[in-house]
Length: 117
Length: 109
Image 1 (cartoon, chains in turn yellow, red):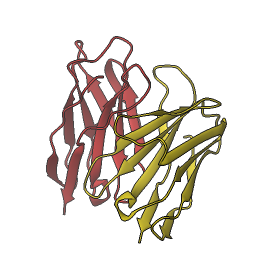
Image 2: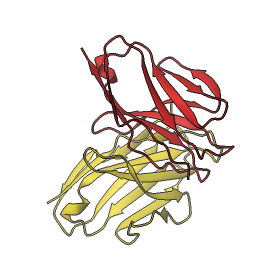
Image 3: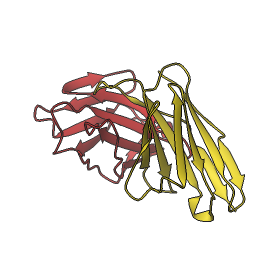
């Protein structure tokens, strides 16, 4: 199956700093990438949808100025958590989709654990 | 958006067949049904996808009745390593997934 990677797998940062997380589709071109957040024992929550070369579409309640998403190429999307605070500590997961066909499956990355001190 | 409803948790014993049913009453004509498995601290892993009737692969079967308002994931002869959360997802037509609670499957020895 298709492979999606994330880097870093975990990161610890101080409150007020910014953290960038990369999501790459390794063996296919991803026209659309998605970013999710997951708190312990909870389900995945969709944060935003990004299409290559265009601005991301954020879900209601997600601050676009705090969670900057860039999808500059068909294999790379980045999520930057700006001015991170302890409440931003979570498990961030990206997924990638290859085409616009309804049956096209989303492939998920392994996730990035963020801890803000 | 098509909303899905699944049992929150299930227990089973090793070697048994497990069936997890998901309801999606508002599924649209073009929507596919996809199931994922998630282990703690990992991203979801694709299990199976279907549109109607029955789909089978090397790890699971998916049964979808004619009205497509529900679907059943069947895991044959589960083992301890199948303990995970299983999510049923329906493409909303905008190609984004809205995750429900999922079903937390616990396989007992």
